[in-house]
Length: 621
Image (tube, rainbow, N blue to C red; front, side):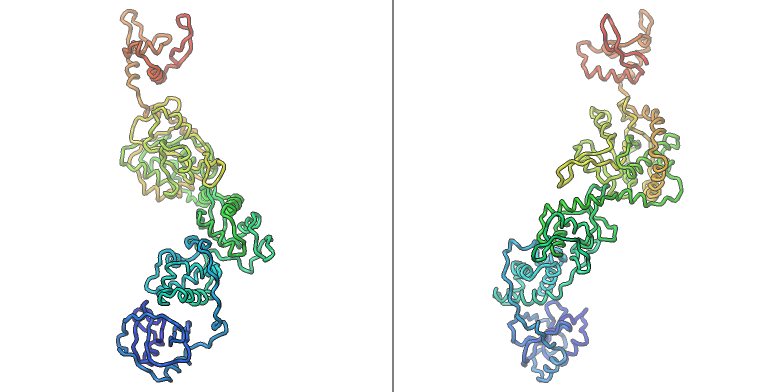
């Protein structure tokens, strides 16, 4: 049989193959892949021969081979097997058969099989997806032997030696299935087939693959021209897997193939190929690939914990901040947008207060980037009807959705800390909890400048500076209940929101905000001072307050004196006289609520002597 490889493209036969088919003039069929031809002839040749450069193989029984007949007859070729003249076969051999080199006729002995438990996991090997899919699932398409051969090449390219490649193929059910089919289910001959065809012949074809920014499959092993650090080696020249040796290797990008750093903004280890800025998070799989790379470069086996410790050390020594780099690289076009931000993009009224809140919000956003953990303890609150696009607009302020998050105070503090890591904008949706007993905890949370938590694979807690600003949204007009702590909140009534406009202009807004912060810091004073009237507008008014306010101005039927004219008032007296409480049923909660009503009406709590005893009462400020 004469086998012609890769000579059919889109149904067209290559001219050289067409010439061979015409010369032999015998039964011809398509190969299983549909990309080659097989010509069956009668005759004899002195030896089987192969020319992989052209793609011709002649099988005449000199070697044990198992061939598949497809029956996919080439239209126009004879339907019977012919016997071409001897000179035709001789001419074919003289034109295409290669002279055998010594290295080709030496039958290398098969290596001993290794214990299957010691073989590498295909999922952790730096090989192509196609090779990994074949080893794991048997995915091979129409050309199983071709896929098997390519897998052998990939294993050698990954730096594995003869024994590991051969044992990997023999122990793999999918590779062995192909081999058994080629050798009539004879396991000994199948192993020999794997060794000769897919190890010995695959090894010279293996070439080191080059990693790309999109796929960190393989990192090239150190080359001879790279100046290596002064590694400590054993008596055979292998590099010892000491912490000092591994640290020197990971520090030198030309050895490990990666630029390893710590991103302070994301609070995580990242890597990029040397000379690029394609930073990617360092994953569990990347530690394995790093070990494979170094061991391919001459290291003795490196432990899992050792590589993690070294990568963390090297990364910390090369800390940078992607958020600072990003914001520092923006160019402002000089057009002011920040001052009128809430008016232009949220439909808020144009007033000194809305301008002050706009200035505060954007200078705080830029400040938390450029000065991590700086004080920014006030939160703008966007008040508007449902469906106006408030939440979408808040998300649009972030340069990308990756840097935005929503905060729910029902989560644990550590979960919130993890959620806020690597974020620039956080939405407080519907302000749940501001008028509950949790309001003090919420205010404390808002004012924090740092988070404390224990990252994955670390033993000790770290302090992570806040990089985001909180922006609240609500469709309720009354949501403030604390007379003393409202300075944290900056309510602004908004109308229809221009989300598309924010997205279009946000980089210029960020660039302008950076310049404002660099020049003047966070602009909080005017917003804090002017927010008093806005707080009053959005306070939750207690129904008791209206009743007590009316009672204060009612004159006594006997004396004509109103309660407001008294020197002081006692909580119990007001509950009984104004709200008709039964003295016996007054609770501590009632007293606390009445204290808030007094405060709202302009009274302060004082300690005076009443009826010969010191007691707490309320008097006008």
